[in-house]
Length: 314
Ligand code: FDA
Image 1 (spheres, helix red, strand yellow):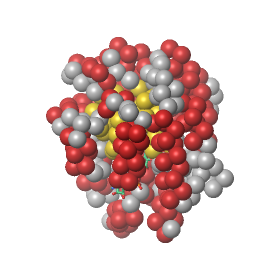
Image 2: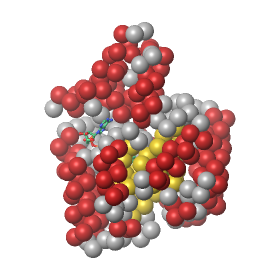
Image 3: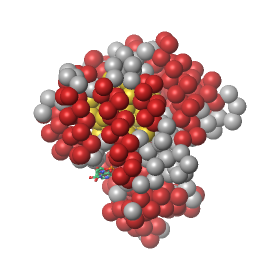
Image 4: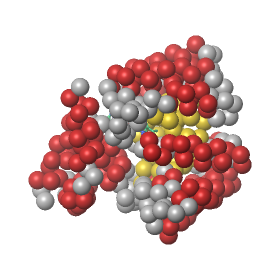
């Protein structure tokens, strides 16, 4: 499928420092960033979560940043999450988990050359304590496949003290159906998505249809299980299948949720919430938006134009 190829090519090109510089400094970037990113500051993120609340949507907030190789930066990111959780609680947005946070372990230490896993775990614990105090939850994002085992190990360690910590699983990985089986247990929060990184054929389905079929198999496992499935997709077919499976298993509306990204299918988000489903929006904020945005651009062939235009105007 040519669009699968284009997606791969974009993810590859984006790794060049030259391209990064061109895109980050391009004037066209600002408007695109504004669509997908809540703003640069903690209050910006809190205010978007508040706006979403007025249309019955829940939020999960992500402080942008990844792959940090600097322990001070990792600690700053941890502190930003703690501050964010304090402000969310103050704004009365954390009751019943209305606003929670999403965390990339590589932003809080996992990618450090020494003791990365231990440092990430320690920082994640501090974030979980703040979330617990605020009355809400934390979900671990899933990054490229070289980190999956370590992220799941950290999840298990965190859940000993904070059983409500959730994690993302990606249907493009061959292993994910088995991971869903492991995690479809009482109290376990699993956010199922397709997956956004460039992965080799040895570990991941390359064809979009195969990724979708895997998503359905994973949904079946999660909806039949005792956990709390979080259906993270904008794909109308998968959303319909998820709703049908939830009905088939007699799930109450508060025993699973739908999730989408800020800026994508915003009207559909409202419609799904209006139909009585729980709908949570992933709200990224912060200055370090490049990696996040590249993955969003790569998802739509039409978005390639944005990339080319940024290069042309520099
Ligand atoms: P798909 O890409 O097939 O899109 C379905 C339809 O949605 C498209 O036809 C289009 O209409 C619309 N659409 C999708 N992307 C769009 C875009 N960028 N711009 C405009 N329209 C678009 N990934 C990961 O690897 N690790 C993670 O931790 C997470 N976390 C995460 C949380 C949440 C809440 C969501 C919704 C997604 C993620 N993802 C993720 C991203 C995920 O893996 C995937 O890349 C995107 O959700 C796009 O896949 P869809 O399931 O939406 O299908």
